[in-house]
Image (tube, rainbow over the protein chains, first blue to last red):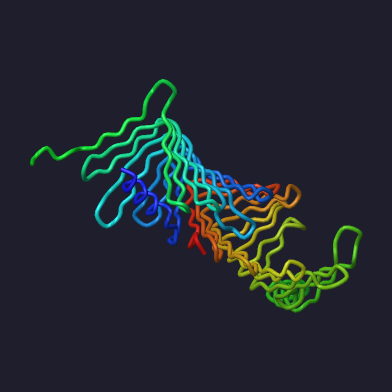
Length: 152
Length: 164
């Protein structure tokens, strides 16, 4: 399971391509360098895609990405050569300098090809050290669904 | 009858040659408290405030209602801001309206099908705009800029090469 997540987030975080965002509304504050996209937000990087109600971008003074927050009905789809991952969460935060991904609020991630699934309240992925941490709700255990081949 | 004919001829000649004479004429507005010097000459103009601030050209300017005017193929270079503005048409009637214009600085290029600039409020409203920069591009159906805040509708925004 860890291999799945590591692969998934290595793909997500390999941000060497352009990031394209479309939305119904946009607001940018020149003083704080904060951009807010709202209404049917669609963020695409190559074949990877995030949909959400809002996306807030925090850029550095030289227009580099510092932090990205997708908030409200977040869903994503990520592909590599062999696999497709889809997921949902209430919120997604990416902290660029630390290369840290934080999924929050009813996180559900699924690998399409073999139906492996993960449910949790919070998933934290650190690309730098290649670690993943999954946190469940209080009084509600984590849930992993791994499809096992029953044929011997 | 001859006198009437003579007056009519003078009147006709006046109508025919007025635009020509006007375009050749140098109009200089003397410095006032509120306005810098402004010079129009042969389809070009310059403004001064101690040193030259703007220099531009236009194919044609029509004045109406005393202070209102419209100009075709306008080009302005802003020396104080190191930038330039081009517009297929600009109309001034209390606010500036630009059609098919672009504004270029050393950092970015901004184009819009129509832009309205309210000088007193320092507010810019653009329709069908595009923005190009070496780090990011953007385009949308409407954009409002005031007090260092941009609001836009139906935007398509691209951040180039995130890791670089």
